[in-house]
Length: 580
Image (tube, rainbow, N blue to C red; front, side, top):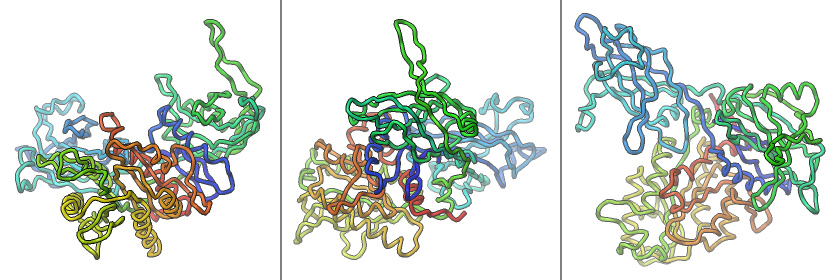
Protein backbone atom coordinates (compact mmCIF):
# COMPACT_ATOMS: atom_id res chain seq x y z
CA UNK A 1 0.00 0.00 0.00
CA UNK A 2 1.10 3.58 -0.34
CA UNK A 3 2.71 4.18 3.03
CA UNK A 4 4.19 6.92 5.14
CA UNK A 5 4.55 6.28 8.82
CA UNK A 6 6.49 7.16 11.92
CA UNK A 7 7.91 4.25 13.87
CA UNK A 8 7.77 3.59 17.58
CA UNK A 9 9.26 1.12 20.05
CA UNK A 10 7.01 -1.65 18.82
CA UNK A 11 7.43 -1.05 15.09
CA UNK A 12 6.05 1.18 12.39
CA UNK A 13 2.44 2.26 12.23
CA UNK A 14 0.74 3.22 9.02
CA UNK A 15 0.22 6.54 7.27
CA UNK A 16 -0.89 9.47 9.36
CA UNK A 17 -0.63 7.68 12.69
CA UNK A 18 1.97 6.79 15.28
CA UNK A 19 1.73 3.74 17.46
CA UNK A 20 0.97 4.32 21.12
CA UNK A 21 4.01 4.64 23.32
CA UNK A 22 3.96 3.88 27.01
CA UNK A 23 7.22 5.77 27.37
CA UNK A 24 6.08 9.00 25.75
CA UNK A 25 3.17 10.77 27.45
CA UNK A 26 2.92 13.24 24.57
CA UNK A 27 1.69 10.82 21.90
CA UNK A 28 -1.99 11.66 22.49
CA UNK A 29 -2.15 14.81 20.28
CA UNK A 30 -1.03 12.81 17.26
CA UNK A 31 -4.51 11.42 16.63
CA UNK A 32 -5.85 14.97 16.49
CA UNK A 33 -3.13 15.66 13.93
CA UNK A 34 -4.47 12.75 11.87
CA UNK A 35 -7.87 14.46 11.82
CA UNK A 36 -6.14 17.70 10.77
CA UNK A 37 -4.44 15.84 7.88
CA UNK A 38 -7.72 14.40 6.65
CA UNK A 39 -9.30 17.86 6.64
CA UNK A 40 -6.53 18.91 4.25
CA UNK A 41 -7.08 16.10 1.77
CA UNK A 42 -5.34 12.93 3.00
CA UNK A 43 -7.30 9.91 1.73
CA UNK A 44 -5.82 6.70 3.09
CA UNK A 45 -3.70 3.95 1.63
CA UNK A 46 -3.54 2.75 -1.94
CA UNK A 47 -1.45 0.56 -4.22
CA UNK A 48 -0.68 0.72 -7.90
CA UNK A 49 -1.56 -2.57 -9.62
CA UNK A 50 -0.37 -3.69 -13.04
CA UNK A 51 -2.84 -5.97 -14.85
CA UNK A 52 -1.54 -8.49 -17.43
CA UNK A 53 -3.92 -10.40 -19.71
CA UNK A 54 -3.86 -13.64 -21.70
CA UNK A 55 -6.54 -15.86 -23.21
CA UNK A 56 -6.95 -19.48 -24.21
CA UNK A 57 -9.30 -21.19 -26.66
CA UNK A 58 -10.88 -18.05 -28.12
CA UNK A 59 -13.54 -18.56 -30.77
CA UNK A 60 -12.29 -18.34 -34.34
CA UNK A 61 -14.40 -15.77 -36.15
CA UNK A 62 -12.20 -15.44 -39.26
CA UNK A 63 -12.70 -17.64 -42.34
CA UNK A 64 -9.19 -17.94 -43.76
CA UNK A 65 -7.17 -17.28 -40.58
CA UNK A 66 -7.48 -17.21 -36.84
CA UNK A 67 -8.93 -14.26 -34.88
CA UNK A 68 -6.93 -11.08 -34.25
CA UNK A 69 -7.94 -10.37 -30.61
CA UNK A 70 -7.80 -7.21 -28.51
CA UNK A 71 -9.12 -6.59 -24.98
CA UNK A 72 -10.90 -3.44 -23.80
CA UNK A 73 -10.85 -2.94 -20.01
CA UNK A 74 -13.59 -1.07 -18.14
CA UNK A 75 -14.50 -0.23 -14.56
CA UNK A 76 -18.16 -0.58 -13.59
CA UNK A 77 -19.73 2.00 -11.26
CA UNK A 78 -22.38 1.28 -8.64
CA UNK A 79 -24.98 2.51 -11.14
CA UNK A 80 -23.82 -0.10 -13.67
CA UNK A 81 -22.20 2.46 -15.95
CA UNK A 82 -18.89 1.55 -17.63
CA UNK A 83 -15.78 3.72 -17.87
CA UNK A 84 -13.06 2.61 -20.25
CA UNK A 85 -9.62 2.23 -18.63
CA UNK A 86 -7.61 1.15 -21.64
CA UNK A 87 -7.00 -1.29 -24.48
CA UNK A 88 -4.40 -3.90 -25.25
CA UNK A 89 -2.63 -4.19 -28.57
CA UNK A 90 -4.04 -6.44 -31.32
CA UNK A 91 -2.41 -9.89 -31.42
CA UNK A 92 -2.53 -11.21 -35.00
CA UNK A 93 -3.80 -14.64 -35.94
CA UNK A 94 -4.05 -16.18 -32.44
CA UNK A 95 -6.65 -18.01 -30.38
CA UNK A 96 -4.31 -18.15 -27.34
CA UNK A 97 -2.95 -14.60 -27.16
CA UNK A 98 -0.68 -13.14 -24.50
CA UNK A 99 -1.00 -9.39 -24.63
CA UNK A 100 2.06 -7.25 -23.88
CA UNK A 101 0.21 -4.03 -23.03
CA UNK A 102 -0.38 -3.73 -19.28
CA UNK A 103 -3.14 -1.81 -17.55
CA UNK A 104 -2.32 0.18 -14.41
CA UNK A 105 -5.08 0.42 -11.80
CA UNK A 106 -5.04 2.10 -8.41
CA UNK A 107 -6.28 -0.44 -5.86
CA UNK A 108 -8.49 0.91 -3.07
CA UNK A 109 -9.28 -1.53 -0.28
CA UNK A 110 -12.42 0.25 0.91
CA UNK A 111 -14.42 0.00 -2.32
CA UNK A 112 -15.46 -2.88 -4.58
CA UNK A 113 -13.74 -2.16 -7.90
CA UNK A 114 -15.59 -4.12 -10.56
CA UNK A 115 -13.63 -4.74 -13.77
CA UNK A 116 -15.18 -5.69 -17.11
CA UNK A 117 -13.06 -7.20 -19.90
CA UNK A 118 -14.39 -7.34 -23.47
CA UNK A 119 -12.52 -9.25 -26.16
CA UNK A 120 -12.86 -8.28 -29.83
CA UNK A 121 -11.61 -9.74 -33.11
CA UNK A 122 -10.23 -6.73 -34.99
CA UNK A 123 -11.02 -6.80 -38.70
CA UNK A 124 -8.04 -6.94 -41.07
CA UNK A 125 -8.90 -3.59 -42.68
CA UNK A 126 -8.30 -1.83 -39.31
CA UNK A 127 -4.88 -3.34 -38.51
CA UNK A 128 -3.09 -0.09 -39.29
CA UNK A 129 -5.40 1.99 -37.09
CA UNK A 130 -4.32 2.91 -33.54
CA UNK A 131 -6.22 0.74 -31.06
CA UNK A 132 -7.60 3.75 -29.20
CA UNK A 133 -9.14 4.98 -32.45
CA UNK A 134 -10.90 1.70 -33.30
CA UNK A 135 -14.70 1.80 -33.44
CA UNK A 136 -15.75 -1.21 -31.37
CA UNK A 137 -19.08 -1.64 -33.13
CA UNK A 138 -17.10 -2.36 -36.31
CA UNK A 139 -15.22 -5.28 -34.66
CA UNK A 140 -16.46 -8.80 -33.92
CA UNK A 141 -17.28 -9.43 -30.26
CA UNK A 142 -15.64 -12.58 -28.87
CA UNK A 143 -16.77 -12.52 -25.25
CA UNK A 144 -16.91 -10.69 -21.94
CA UNK A 145 -15.75 -11.43 -18.38
CA UNK A 146 -16.27 -9.60 -15.10
CA UNK A 147 -14.58 -9.72 -11.68
CA UNK A 148 -13.74 -7.54 -8.70
CA UNK A 149 -10.13 -6.40 -8.39
CA UNK A 150 -10.25 -7.82 -4.83
CA UNK A 151 -10.84 -11.30 -6.28
CA UNK A 152 -7.50 -11.11 -8.08
CA UNK A 153 -5.31 -9.61 -5.36
CA UNK A 154 -6.53 -12.08 -2.73
CA UNK A 155 -5.25 -15.05 -4.76
CA UNK A 156 -1.87 -16.29 -3.51
CA UNK A 157 -0.48 -16.11 -7.06
CA UNK A 158 -2.68 -13.10 -7.97
CA UNK A 159 -3.93 -15.07 -10.97
CA UNK A 160 -7.62 -15.40 -11.85
CA UNK A 161 -9.10 -17.40 -14.77
CA UNK A 162 -12.49 -16.19 -16.04
CA UNK A 163 -14.93 -17.74 -18.48
CA UNK A 164 -15.73 -15.55 -21.47
CA UNK A 165 -19.45 -15.16 -22.21
CA UNK A 166 -21.61 -13.34 -24.72
CA UNK A 167 -23.49 -10.33 -23.40
CA UNK A 168 -26.85 -11.63 -24.60
CA UNK A 169 -26.21 -14.84 -22.63
CA UNK A 170 -25.25 -13.24 -19.32
CA UNK A 171 -28.81 -13.04 -17.95
CA UNK A 172 -29.78 -16.58 -18.95
CA UNK A 173 -29.97 -19.36 -16.29
CA UNK A 174 -27.03 -21.37 -17.69
CA UNK A 175 -25.25 -18.94 -19.98
CA UNK A 176 -21.84 -20.61 -20.23
CA UNK A 177 -20.76 -22.08 -23.51
CA UNK A 178 -17.21 -22.63 -24.63
CA UNK A 179 -16.25 -19.06 -25.53
CA UNK A 180 -12.71 -19.41 -24.21
CA UNK A 181 -11.10 -18.18 -21.03
CA UNK A 182 -9.42 -14.94 -19.98
CA UNK A 183 -6.45 -15.13 -17.60
CA UNK A 184 -5.92 -12.03 -15.45
CA UNK A 185 -2.73 -11.48 -13.46
CA UNK A 186 -2.13 -8.63 -11.01
CA UNK A 187 1.25 -7.40 -9.86
CA UNK A 188 1.86 -4.70 -7.30
CA UNK A 189 4.14 -1.91 -8.48
CA UNK A 190 7.61 -1.98 -6.89
CA UNK A 191 7.20 1.73 -6.15
CA UNK A 192 4.25 0.79 -3.90
CA UNK A 193 6.76 -0.95 -1.63
CA UNK A 194 9.78 1.35 -1.86
CA UNK A 195 10.01 3.81 1.01
CA UNK A 196 12.45 6.43 2.16
CA UNK A 197 13.31 6.47 5.86
CA UNK A 198 14.24 9.89 7.22
CA UNK A 199 15.13 11.19 10.65
CA UNK A 200 14.36 14.89 10.89
CA UNK A 201 15.10 17.57 13.44
CA UNK A 202 14.86 21.34 13.73
CA UNK A 203 16.88 24.01 15.52
CA UNK A 204 15.92 27.48 16.76
CA UNK A 205 12.17 27.22 16.24
CA UNK A 206 10.20 30.31 17.17
CA UNK A 207 7.97 30.57 20.23
CA UNK A 208 4.28 30.29 19.31
CA UNK A 209 2.76 29.70 22.75
CA UNK A 210 2.41 32.49 25.29
CA UNK A 211 3.56 30.70 28.44
CA UNK A 212 5.64 27.82 27.05
CA UNK A 213 7.74 26.73 24.12
CA UNK A 214 6.13 25.49 20.91
CA UNK A 215 4.69 21.97 20.46
CA UNK A 216 6.04 21.23 16.97
CA UNK A 217 5.21 18.57 14.40
CA UNK A 218 5.97 18.25 10.69
CA UNK A 219 3.54 17.67 7.85
CA UNK A 220 5.03 16.51 4.54
CA UNK A 221 2.88 17.14 1.45
CA UNK A 222 3.26 16.61 -2.26
CA UNK A 223 2.71 19.50 -4.63
CA UNK A 224 0.04 18.72 -7.23
CA UNK A 225 0.17 20.14 -10.76
CA UNK A 226 -2.71 22.45 -9.85
CA UNK A 227 -0.53 23.99 -7.15
CA UNK A 228 -2.44 22.60 -4.17
CA UNK A 229 -0.65 20.59 -1.49
CA UNK A 230 -1.79 17.06 -0.60
CA UNK A 231 -0.57 15.69 2.77
CA UNK A 232 1.18 12.32 2.64
CA UNK A 233 2.95 12.09 5.98
CA UNK A 234 3.43 13.59 9.42
CA UNK A 235 5.62 13.25 12.47
CA UNK A 236 4.52 12.98 16.06
CA UNK A 237 3.95 16.08 18.21
CA UNK A 238 6.79 16.94 20.60
CA UNK A 239 5.66 19.07 23.52
CA UNK A 240 7.41 22.20 24.74
CA UNK A 241 10.49 22.00 22.49
CA UNK A 242 12.29 24.46 20.17
CA UNK A 243 14.89 21.98 18.91
CA UNK A 244 12.83 18.82 18.29
CA UNK A 245 14.19 15.53 16.96
CA UNK A 246 11.33 13.43 15.60
CA UNK A 247 11.06 9.68 15.25
CA UNK A 248 11.91 8.36 11.77
CA UNK A 249 9.27 8.79 9.08
CA UNK A 250 8.80 6.56 6.03
CA UNK A 251 7.60 8.07 2.77
CA UNK A 252 6.41 5.80 -0.01
CA UNK A 253 8.00 6.92 -3.29
CA UNK A 254 4.89 6.09 -5.31
CA UNK A 255 2.81 8.31 -3.07
CA UNK A 256 4.84 11.40 -3.95
CA UNK A 257 5.49 10.50 -7.60
CA UNK A 258 9.28 10.18 -7.73
CA UNK A 259 12.41 11.21 -5.84
CA UNK A 260 12.47 14.42 -7.92
CA UNK A 261 8.88 15.45 -7.18
CA UNK A 262 8.61 18.65 -5.10
CA UNK A 263 7.58 18.25 -1.46
CA UNK A 264 6.39 20.89 0.97
CA UNK A 265 7.58 20.32 4.55
CA UNK A 266 5.61 22.42 7.03
CA UNK A 267 6.40 22.76 10.72
CA UNK A 268 3.30 23.47 12.84
CA UNK A 269 2.74 24.32 16.49
CA UNK A 270 0.06 21.98 17.83
CA UNK A 271 -3.11 23.50 19.30
CA UNK A 272 -5.91 21.51 20.94
CA UNK A 273 -8.56 23.40 18.95
CA UNK A 274 -7.17 22.02 15.70
CA UNK A 275 -6.03 25.44 14.44
CA UNK A 276 -2.32 24.69 14.32
CA UNK A 277 0.09 27.62 13.84
CA UNK A 278 2.51 27.47 10.91
CA UNK A 279 6.04 27.97 12.28
CA UNK A 280 7.79 27.74 8.92
CA UNK A 281 8.30 25.52 5.89
CA UNK A 282 10.65 24.48 3.09
CA UNK A 283 10.21 23.03 -0.41
CA UNK A 284 12.52 20.16 -1.33
CA UNK A 285 12.37 16.93 -3.34
CA UNK A 286 13.47 13.62 -1.83
CA UNK A 287 16.62 13.84 -3.97
CA UNK A 288 17.40 17.26 -2.53
CA UNK A 289 16.73 16.03 1.02
CA UNK A 290 19.18 13.19 0.36
CA UNK A 291 21.82 15.78 -0.64
CA UNK A 292 21.00 17.80 2.47
CA UNK A 293 21.65 14.69 4.56
CA UNK A 294 24.96 14.03 2.78
CA UNK A 295 26.15 17.60 3.37
CA UNK A 296 25.21 17.56 7.06
CA UNK A 297 23.93 21.12 6.70
CA UNK A 298 20.55 22.53 7.64
CA UNK A 299 18.01 24.32 5.46
CA UNK A 300 16.45 27.56 6.69
CA UNK A 301 12.68 27.55 7.04
CA UNK A 302 10.69 30.37 5.49
CA UNK A 303 7.34 31.93 6.29
CA UNK A 304 5.09 33.37 3.57
CA UNK A 305 4.23 36.98 4.46
CA UNK A 306 2.18 39.71 2.82
CA UNK A 307 2.92 43.41 3.10
CA UNK A 308 0.28 45.48 1.37
CA UNK A 309 -0.21 43.83 -2.01
CA UNK A 310 3.23 42.25 -2.06
CA UNK A 311 3.82 38.64 -1.03
CA UNK A 312 7.24 37.28 -0.24
CA UNK A 313 8.93 34.57 1.82
CA UNK A 314 10.53 35.64 5.07
CA UNK A 315 13.63 33.50 5.70
CA UNK A 316 13.83 32.38 9.33
CA UNK A 317 16.80 31.44 11.48
CA UNK A 318 15.01 28.15 12.19
CA UNK A 319 16.62 25.23 10.35
CA UNK A 320 15.63 21.72 9.29
CA UNK A 321 18.23 18.91 9.34
CA UNK A 322 18.04 15.44 7.78
CA UNK A 323 20.00 13.19 10.17
CA UNK A 324 19.16 9.94 8.36
CA UNK A 325 18.14 9.12 4.78
CA UNK A 326 17.87 5.49 3.64
CA UNK A 327 15.83 3.64 1.00
CA UNK A 328 13.98 0.53 2.20
CA UNK A 329 11.43 -1.97 0.90
CA UNK A 330 8.33 -2.42 3.06
CA UNK A 331 5.92 -5.35 3.10
CA UNK A 332 2.51 -4.11 1.99
CA UNK A 333 -1.05 -5.13 2.82
CA UNK A 334 -1.18 -7.02 -0.48
CA UNK A 335 2.04 -8.86 0.40
CA UNK A 336 0.35 -10.23 3.51
CA UNK A 337 -2.67 -11.34 1.45
CA UNK A 338 -0.35 -13.10 -1.01
CA UNK A 339 1.34 -14.73 1.99
CA UNK A 340 -1.91 -16.41 3.05
CA UNK A 341 -3.32 -13.87 5.53
CA UNK A 342 -7.03 -13.20 5.42
CA UNK A 343 -9.67 -11.05 7.10
CA UNK A 344 -12.40 -12.77 9.13
CA UNK A 345 -15.65 -10.81 9.45
CA UNK A 346 -17.95 -10.80 12.50
CA UNK A 347 -21.12 -8.77 13.19
CA UNK A 348 -23.08 -7.73 16.29
CA UNK A 349 -26.55 -6.14 16.05
CA UNK A 350 -28.25 -3.92 18.67
CA UNK A 351 -31.64 -5.32 19.74
CA UNK A 352 -32.37 -2.81 22.51
CA UNK A 353 -35.88 -1.43 22.93
CA UNK A 354 -34.88 2.08 21.84
CA UNK A 355 -34.94 0.79 18.24
CA UNK A 356 -38.74 0.70 18.42
CA UNK A 357 -41.26 -2.07 17.79
CA UNK A 358 -39.92 -3.90 14.74
CA UNK A 359 -43.47 -4.46 13.44
CA UNK A 360 -44.03 -0.71 13.03
CA UNK A 361 -42.70 1.30 10.05
CA UNK A 362 -41.00 3.90 12.27
CA UNK A 363 -38.77 1.23 13.89
CA UNK A 364 -35.11 1.05 12.93
CA UNK A 365 -35.62 -2.73 12.75
CA UNK A 366 -38.69 -2.58 10.48
CA UNK A 367 -38.47 -5.14 7.64
CA UNK A 368 -40.03 -3.40 4.64
CA UNK A 369 -42.19 -5.83 2.62
CA UNK A 370 -41.09 -4.04 -0.57
CA UNK A 371 -37.55 -5.29 0.07
CA UNK A 372 -36.06 -1.88 0.82
CA UNK A 373 -33.35 -2.55 3.44
CA UNK A 374 -33.41 -0.78 6.80
CA UNK A 375 -30.30 0.95 8.19
CA UNK A 376 -29.06 -2.22 9.90
CA UNK A 377 -29.40 -4.26 6.73
CA UNK A 378 -27.77 -1.57 4.60
CA UNK A 379 -24.76 -1.29 6.89
CA UNK A 380 -24.30 -5.08 6.90
CA UNK A 381 -24.62 -5.38 3.12
CA UNK A 382 -22.24 -2.53 2.35
CA UNK A 383 -19.52 -3.73 4.73
CA UNK A 384 -19.77 -7.42 3.80
CA UNK A 385 -19.76 -6.60 0.06
CA UNK A 386 -16.21 -5.30 0.53
CA UNK A 387 -14.87 -7.74 3.15
CA UNK A 388 -16.26 -11.00 1.73
CA UNK A 389 -13.43 -11.23 -0.82
CA UNK A 390 -10.88 -11.39 2.02
CA UNK A 391 -12.64 -14.17 3.98
CA UNK A 392 -12.07 -17.53 2.29
CA UNK A 393 -14.89 -19.60 3.84
CA UNK A 394 -17.40 -16.72 4.08
CA UNK A 395 -18.75 -18.14 7.33
CA UNK A 396 -19.42 -15.18 9.60
CA UNK A 397 -19.98 -15.19 13.39
CA UNK A 398 -23.17 -13.16 13.97
CA UNK A 399 -24.43 -12.01 17.36
CA UNK A 400 -27.17 -9.88 18.83
CA UNK A 401 -27.18 -7.96 22.10
CA UNK A 402 -29.65 -6.17 24.37
CA UNK A 403 -32.61 -8.54 23.86
CA UNK A 404 -34.54 -11.13 25.85
CA UNK A 405 -34.84 -14.52 24.14
CA UNK A 406 -38.18 -16.30 24.61
CA UNK A 407 -38.55 -17.34 28.28
CA UNK A 408 -35.05 -16.18 29.14
CA UNK A 409 -33.19 -13.26 30.76
CA UNK A 410 -31.76 -10.32 28.81
CA UNK A 411 -28.68 -11.40 26.85
CA UNK A 412 -25.88 -9.08 25.85
CA UNK A 413 -24.35 -11.56 23.41
CA UNK A 414 -26.55 -14.22 21.81
CA UNK A 415 -26.15 -16.14 18.56
CA UNK A 416 -28.16 -14.43 15.86
CA UNK A 417 -29.10 -17.79 14.27
CA UNK A 418 -30.79 -18.98 17.47
CA UNK A 419 -28.34 -21.84 17.95
CA UNK A 420 -26.95 -22.56 21.39
CA UNK A 421 -23.89 -24.26 19.91
CA UNK A 422 -22.54 -22.24 17.00
CA UNK A 423 -22.65 -18.59 15.95
CA UNK A 424 -21.58 -18.78 12.29
CA UNK A 425 -23.84 -18.15 9.30
CA UNK A 426 -23.20 -18.55 5.56
CA UNK A 427 -22.50 -15.34 3.65
CA UNK A 428 -24.53 -12.13 3.42
CA UNK A 429 -27.78 -14.04 2.95
CA UNK A 430 -27.08 -16.09 6.06
CA UNK A 431 -26.72 -12.91 8.13
CA UNK A 432 -29.94 -11.44 6.66
CA UNK A 433 -31.93 -14.62 7.32
CA UNK A 434 -30.63 -14.93 10.91
CA UNK A 435 -31.33 -11.23 11.56
CA UNK A 436 -34.94 -11.43 10.30
CA UNK A 437 -35.51 -14.65 12.29
CA UNK A 438 -34.09 -13.12 15.49
CA UNK A 439 -36.54 -10.22 15.25
CA UNK A 440 -39.37 -12.77 15.47
CA UNK A 441 -37.86 -14.73 18.35
CA UNK A 442 -36.56 -12.16 20.86
CA UNK A 443 -38.02 -9.25 22.80
CA UNK A 444 -36.17 -5.96 22.48
CA UNK A 445 -34.83 -4.89 25.88
CA UNK A 446 -31.62 -3.21 27.09
CA UNK A 447 -29.35 -1.61 28.22
CA UNK A 448 -26.71 -1.10 25.47
CA UNK A 449 -23.61 -3.06 26.47
CA UNK A 450 -20.64 -3.58 24.11
CA UNK A 451 -18.30 -5.33 26.55
CA UNK A 452 -19.65 -8.90 26.08
CA UNK A 453 -19.58 -8.90 22.24
CA UNK A 454 -16.11 -7.31 22.14
CA UNK A 455 -14.88 -9.93 24.61
CA UNK A 456 -16.38 -12.69 22.45
CA UNK A 457 -14.73 -11.30 19.31
CA UNK A 458 -11.42 -10.98 21.16
CA UNK A 459 -11.71 -14.62 22.25
CA UNK A 460 -11.97 -15.69 18.59
CA UNK A 461 -8.90 -13.62 17.74
CA UNK A 462 -6.84 -14.91 20.69
CA UNK A 463 -7.71 -18.53 19.86
CA UNK A 464 -6.56 -17.96 16.28
CA UNK A 465 -3.24 -16.54 17.53
CA UNK A 466 -2.78 -19.52 19.86
CA UNK A 467 -3.37 -21.89 16.95
CA UNK A 468 -0.90 -20.07 14.70
CA UNK A 469 -3.64 -18.79 12.38
CA UNK A 470 -2.88 -16.15 9.78
CA UNK A 471 -6.12 -14.29 10.31
CA UNK A 472 -7.08 -10.72 11.17
CA UNK A 473 -10.57 -10.24 12.60
CA UNK A 474 -13.01 -7.42 11.87
CA UNK A 475 -16.04 -6.90 14.14
CA UNK A 476 -18.91 -4.71 12.89
CA UNK A 477 -21.16 -3.36 15.68
CA UNK A 478 -24.38 -1.63 14.59
CA UNK A 479 -26.17 0.29 17.32
CA UNK A 480 -28.84 2.95 17.79
CA UNK A 481 -27.64 4.24 21.14
CA UNK A 482 -24.75 5.30 23.27
CA UNK A 483 -23.00 2.52 25.13
CA UNK A 484 -23.81 2.35 28.86
CA UNK A 485 -20.97 0.07 30.02
CA UNK A 486 -18.41 2.71 29.08
CA UNK A 487 -15.55 1.58 31.30
CA UNK A 488 -16.09 -2.12 30.66
CA UNK A 489 -16.03 -1.36 26.93
CA UNK A 490 -12.80 0.64 27.30
CA UNK A 491 -11.21 -2.20 29.28
CA UNK A 492 -12.22 -4.73 26.60
CA UNK A 493 -10.88 -2.48 23.80
CA UNK A 494 -7.54 -1.85 25.53
CA UNK A 495 -7.11 -5.59 26.07
CA UNK A 496 -8.13 -6.34 22.46
CA UNK A 497 -5.64 -3.80 21.05
CA UNK A 498 -2.91 -6.46 21.40
CA UNK A 499 -4.88 -8.90 19.23
CA UNK A 500 -5.42 -9.15 15.44
CA UNK A 501 -8.74 -7.32 15.68
CA UNK A 502 -10.36 -4.13 14.40
CA UNK A 503 -13.81 -2.91 15.42
CA UNK A 504 -16.11 -0.92 13.15
CA UNK A 505 -19.05 0.80 14.85
CA UNK A 506 -22.01 2.19 12.87
CA UNK A 507 -24.45 4.43 14.72
CA UNK A 508 -27.98 4.37 13.24
CA UNK A 509 -30.95 6.54 14.11
CA UNK A 510 -31.05 10.01 15.63
CA UNK A 511 -29.18 9.54 18.92
CA UNK A 512 -26.40 11.87 20.05
CA UNK A 513 -23.27 9.83 19.40
CA UNK A 514 -20.69 12.34 20.69
CA UNK A 515 -19.72 10.08 23.60
CA UNK A 516 -19.23 7.20 21.17
CA UNK A 517 -16.51 9.12 19.34
CA UNK A 518 -14.35 8.85 22.48
CA UNK A 519 -13.91 5.16 21.63
CA UNK A 520 -12.48 6.17 18.24
CA UNK A 521 -8.97 7.41 18.98
CA UNK A 522 -8.93 9.45 15.77
CA UNK A 523 -10.80 12.14 17.65
CA UNK A 524 -8.31 12.81 20.43
CA UNK A 525 -6.99 10.76 23.33
CA UNK A 526 -5.97 7.10 23.30
CA UNK A 527 -8.09 4.72 25.32
CA UNK A 528 -7.03 3.91 28.87
CA UNK A 529 -8.30 1.01 30.96
CA UNK A 530 -9.49 1.16 34.57
CA UNK A 531 -6.03 -0.11 35.62
CA UNK A 532 -4.26 2.74 33.77
CA UNK A 533 -3.08 0.67 30.83
CA UNK A 534 -3.07 2.51 27.46
CA UNK A 535 -4.21 0.83 24.24
CA UNK A 536 -1.24 -0.34 22.18
CA UNK A 537 -2.93 0.89 19.02
CA UNK A 538 -6.19 2.35 17.70
CA UNK A 539 -8.55 -0.49 16.72
CA UNK A 540 -11.90 1.36 16.57
CA UNK A 541 -13.55 3.24 13.73
CA UNK A 542 -16.90 4.92 14.45
CA UNK A 543 -19.24 6.66 12.04
CA UNK A 544 -22.86 7.82 12.40
CA UNK A 545 -24.75 6.34 9.44
CA UNK A 546 -26.61 9.57 8.75
CA UNK A 547 -23.39 11.57 8.32
CA UNK A 548 -22.52 9.83 5.07
CA UNK A 549 -25.89 8.79 3.66
CA UNK A 550 -26.17 11.55 1.06
CA UNK A 551 -22.51 12.48 0.60
CA UNK A 552 -19.92 11.28 -1.89
CA UNK A 553 -18.18 9.14 0.74
CA UNK A 554 -20.16 6.01 1.60
CA UNK A 555 -20.40 4.65 5.13
CA UNK A 556 -18.27 1.71 4.00
CA UNK A 557 -15.45 3.94 2.77
CA UNK A 558 -15.54 6.03 5.95
CA UNK A 559 -15.41 2.88 8.09
CA UNK A 560 -12.99 0.77 6.11
CA UNK A 561 -10.47 3.41 4.99
CA UNK A 562 -8.17 2.80 7.97
CA UNK A 563 -8.50 -0.98 8.17
CA UNK A 564 -5.36 -1.81 6.11
CA UNK A 565 -3.38 0.67 8.25
CA UNK A 566 -4.60 -1.01 11.46
CA UNK A 567 -3.73 -4.41 9.97
CA UNK A 568 -0.20 -3.26 9.07
CA UNK A 569 0.30 -1.62 12.47
CA UNK A 570 -0.52 -4.91 14.20
CA UNK A 571 1.80 -6.92 11.94
CA UNK A 572 4.69 -4.47 12.36
CA UNK A 573 4.27 -4.20 16.12
CA UNK A 574 4.69 -8.00 16.23
CA UNK A 575 7.42 -7.94 13.57
CA UNK A 576 5.27 -10.47 11.72
CA UNK A 577 6.42 -10.76 8.09
CA UNK A 578 4.53 -12.44 5.23
CA UNK A 579 5.85 -15.67 3.73
CA UNK A 580 6.08 -14.94 0.01
